[in-house]
Amino acid sequence: ASSASSLSPVSSLLSHDSSSSPPKPTKAAAPRRGWSCGTQGLVLVFGVLILSLVIFMALPSPLCSQLHIGCRDIDVVVIGAGPAGSAVAYHLAAQGKRALVIEAGGPSQMATGGEAYLYKNLTAFDIPLAWSYVAQLPEYHWDVHGDAILAKVVGGCGVHNAMLYVRALPENIESWNMSQWWRWQDILDQYRRLEQYQGAGETTAEHGEGGPTVTSEPIYEDILGQKFLETTEILGIPQTRDFNGPGMRFGAGKYHFNIRHGVRDGAAATLLIPSLRAHPENLALSMFTLVDKIEFQNAQNPNGDGHALRAVSLSGVDKFGNRWSQPLGTKTKLVLAAGAINTPSLLMKSGIGNRGIMAAAGLGEPLLELPFVGKGLQDHPAVGLVFEVLPPLTADMASVYRRFTNYTQHGRMKDYPTSFGYPGFSTGAFLYSGIDEASFQGEESVNTTAAAADDDDDEYSDPNYGRRTKKRMPDLQLTVFPIMIEPHIAKRTLEITYDKVLVTVAVVTPRTHYNLRFAENAPPVSNRDDDGPLWNPFLCWRGPPLTQPKPPRHRFRSPVRRQ
Image 1 (cartoon, rainbow, N blue to C red):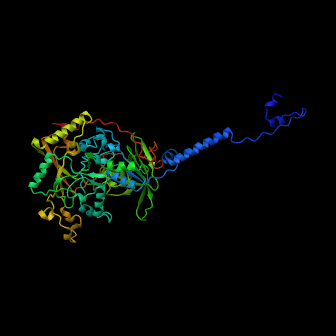
Image 2: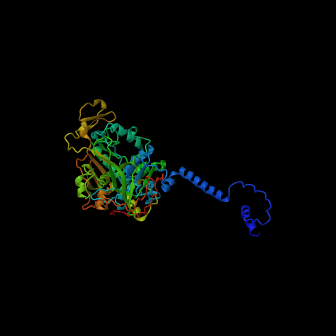
């Protein structure tokens, strides 16, 4: 009886002995309302999962990166975060395209995440006077042969150049004869959209005012530059107020610079970084990521003729030296903006280019032979002329640069002199060499009005710039440096003196062409990808700029000896 009492009513009935007295009738229990504890727990778990899914759907970045669900292909991958890559990313983001910019180097200017501070929140890349100094820091540059100085940072060579802002001329654009959409008026409109002109004078109307990039007159005028302009005027050389003004390229004058209130206004700081902040859902940047090969496959040419290739994957090396490989979406487009040297190099390492150059480098047979890849490159050959001068002509610059080199040796600056906001020179001239029979012939070189233009095939007419003769463009550029800080010269001498000045004479329209050549016995590109993908931005989109490793803090050292 005691054991039966512990059984359920049904169990009690099943265990009843017939010899015993019949059980007393019992009242049926009322059905239990609601869910059992187990059911409630199960519903709670499912509720949490559904809520989490809703939250993840509202925040697609974690969902995509963790679960590979709901991801979209990137529209465009841009290789290179220099001036060209920054400009491309700027326009893509404005058009609502999803784009990833890949850069082999790390941050440079403060706006790009650089931390090599020289003054408060300014890095050496931000300070205009430091341009020659940073151009000689090997940790921020590619190791290439010859005199080429190629920056390996976000911003590219736009973070170590002299910040000169000199537009192309109408003749330059028209001589290319590229297409009906690549005409001088179109390019001039783009210049004006880009500019935020902060100069003065009669040519203000020829510049843009609301663009992202500042163009300004020098905020500091050195004594030598002033004397140079006085001397050229005495010699009868025309004085120009604006080298970018209509018909004003020929002559001597002050340069315009991409400097905003004493700080370098590079393309990365003005175009790329603001776009990353304004469009985090569409634009991302991956630093310290080297792309050394593009994998191609045969594809159907949309025009129905010729040989077509489609990029299907990228591979390269991460900052730890490990290889990575990443497939491209079927609709993802690829923009190579790795610079004049690294772009053709990447193409040839990927099987596209000049057969002879590739064979010499051990890169094998090309998938697609394009004989001019890596050939026909041009630069502005320059000669540096050094003159001894009386100390008063360089006294101001000597004081400024001594102060600057003192800070590079002993730590951060306590203040920021106005003179540090200019690049160490301010004046120059565009002249004719006379080497061509149609060169400068007195007043004939000066532009006339558009009404005087005729149909002569040897001339170009533009309502804004008047009549020009193509053969009479200035072909020499003179720049006056109060001290020898031009980086190619300084790279050789490693010596700054204040009793000598430098005048560089550069060929504006050179006839010399250069070819890319790989280092002797260069090994072919490895196809290894054993370590798998380093990141998967095409399947795992994170929205905001990709998390970047912080670079080591740089201890500044002066690269020059002072006398």
